[in-house]
Image 1: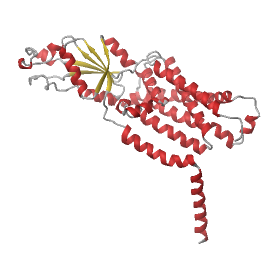
Image 2: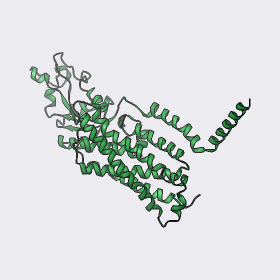
Image 3: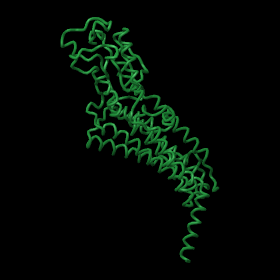
Image 4: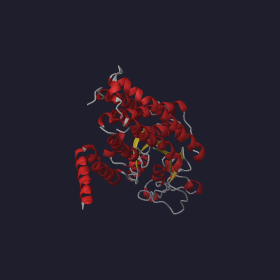
Amino acid sequence: MRSLRRILAVLFKELTQLRRDRMTFGMVIMIPLIQLILFGYAINTNVRDIPVAVVDQSQTGLSRVLIQMVEATRVVKVVEHHTNVQDAEEAIRSARVRAAFILPDDLDNRIVRSPSAGFGTPPSTDEETSRPVAQWIVDGSDTLIASAIKSLRSMPLSELFREPPNRNTATFEVALFYNPEQRTAVNIVPGLVGVILTMTMIMFTSAAIVRERERGNMEMLINTPIRSLELMIGKIIPYVFIGLVQLGIILGLGHILFGVPLSGNMLDLLGGTLLFIGASLSLGLVLSTIATSQLQAMQMTVFVLLPSILLSGFMFPYEGMPIIAQYIAEALPATHFMRMIRGFVLRDATFLDLYRDVVWLAGFFFLGMIVAAFRFKKRLD
C-alpha cells in the first residue's frame, strides 16, 4: 500500500510538471497532429500539374488543340512557351519546369487522320504511321515525375482524331534526361544530404545556448566582452566543417557505391552547401534562444525536421502537394537546397540557373543570425 502511494506521488508530480511545461505539452499535441495533416492532406504520390514548357514548332490550330488535350489530363501544366529546344532544356536545368513538350513542324503529317475527321488524308506508308506525334523531354532525376509523364506516352487521340488500327508506336516519344535508367539512388542520395544536414545542423545548434546555461557557463560568458553576434558566429563555425565532412561522405560513397553522377561544378556545390549549412545553423540558434532546456530544443528540432523531410521534395514530389503545403515548403531551407543540390549534382546547373534559391538561403541565413543575436541576452534570466 505504501509502495502504491509512492508511485502515485511520483505520477502526480510528473503530470504536474508536464502541465507546467507548456512547450513539451504543446509538442505532445502538435507532432501527431502535424503528421496526420501532412500524410493525410499534403502528401500525394499521385502527381498532378507538373510544370512543363512547350516548344511549338508547328504553330497550327492542330498543335494548339493537342496542347489543350495534354493539359486536360491534369498531369502537366504549361507554364512556359519557347521557340527552340535549347531554351526549353535550359528551363529544365534551372528547375523552372520539369519537362518540355516538343511539337515538330511536320505535326500534321505525323498524326494519322481519317478524311472524315476534317484534317486531310491519312498517310499511307508504314514509316509515317510509326513515327511518334511529338516528344517529351523529361527531368528523369525524379522517378515519380518521370513515371507520371511517361503515362502520357500512349495517350489516345481518338477523341478528336480517328486513328486507324495500324498505328504501331506510342503517341509520344519520351526522352529521360539526367537519369535515363530511372534509378532511385540517383534521386535519393543528393536529397539525403539535405535531410542529414537539416537534422544534424539544427540539432547541434538548437541546444547551444541552453547547454551553456545548464552547464553553468553562462556566468563566464556574461563577464566576457564578447557581443551577441560574435557569440553566434563563434558557435556555428565548428559545425560548418562538420557539415562539409558529411557532404563529402554522402556524395563520395554515393558515387562509389551507387554510381550517382557528380556532373556539376564542385565550387557551385560547395557554395550552395555552405549557404544551406549557414541557414540551418542560424535556424538552430534561433530555436536555442527560445528553448529553456535541451529537451525542449530537441522537441523543436523534431518539429522542424518532420516538415523538412516530408515537404521539401525529398520523399514526395513538390508538384504533387496542395498550394498551401507548397507555401509552407517554400519557407523551409531544405526545400531550396533540394533543388540546388540536385541541380548542381545531376543537371550541371550553376548558381545563375538557381539564383532564386541562392538568394533565399542567403537571406534566411542573415536574417536568422540577426534574430538569434537580438534574442540572446547576456543575463541569467
